[in-house]
Amino acid sequence: MKPRILTQITGWGLLALLLALQTGCGFRLRGSVEIPPTYNPLRIQAPSGSPVERALHDLLIGSQVRLTSNSADAKLTLRILGEQRSERVAAVDLNGKTLAYELHYLVDFDAIGADGQARIPRQTLDLTRTFDNPDVEVLGKQLEQAMIYDDFAVEAADRILMRLRAVLR
Image 1 (tube, helix red, strand yellow):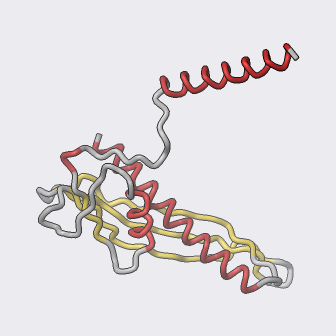
Image 2 (cartoon, rainbow, N blue to C red; image 1 turned 90 degrees about the horizontal axis):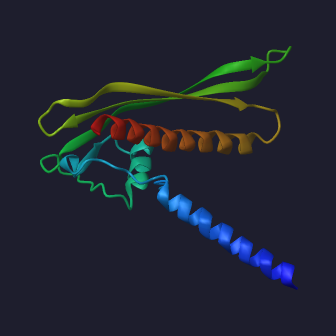
């Protein structure tokens, strides 16, 4: 019976030690967006129905960043200048049937301060993924392709926020 109690005490002690080390190392959950208060509130300007704009809003929910739709109130305007989807054939079989596509998602963006000066010059993100195209499950493959483009929008939003944090520090 004694070894079991010793094992429990050792397990709890190890857990407490790990928690103490984790809080001391500066660990923070990913997703907290740190933008200096001088750039709050932030305005996101994007084409209507932009998936990247939706993803940016989702990533900023619960953060210290306030959003505004009024350009006069905005200290910083993040502009999504364009989004473009494309695909090209990546592999074919001996009969010329397409086996795989390479999917691309291009996003052009910049950030402008309240004074009209560029805080982030125009940049382009080019996200790429290979998409297999077998003969079976055609409807499932269309859904998978749509999900990949949704993932691209979230990844693009995350990369834009990373660049924004790096530049504004």
